[in-house]
Image (cartoon, rainbow, N blue to C red):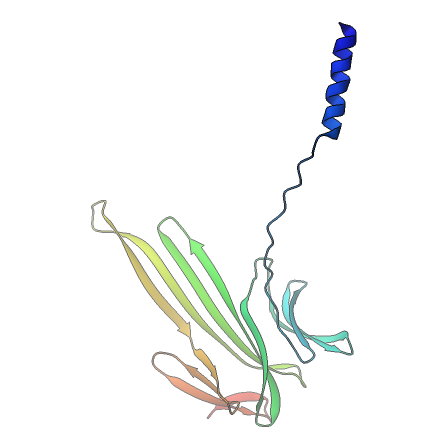
Length: 192
């Protein structure tokens, strides 16, 4: 009886060793935001900073810090383009940030579009703009009863940014529109 029991234990242990092992669960692929490259510039997040790295001959020589960010920062629709204004080559960086705040009674979806223009020879930011759209969905009680209603609101801040073909910039909102041209001596955009 002891021999049968011992033989059974050895058989079960060896069977367990040769049995097919379950493959480890694969983590879902996270889509990292695509950061644009242009000329010798690379947009990236490095050491808690959203930045534009300037490379020469394959080495990163300098950088322009756009803003300090946290681990949650994930810009959407990030674009980097060059254009000429008043005979000076400038670079426009645009990106969108989406922030959703949900509670039991209210949901806010804040979409902010940022536009920043840099002059690289002096490594200076010469223009900055943001446009915020806040879509609010809220459950509201009607009077003293238990009846509720879902209300939606849209709030806007800032200006819509338009880069014109001649290198000038237009800011507009519901009530006003302003055009700015680049002053290369003072390295800033001024009202037209």
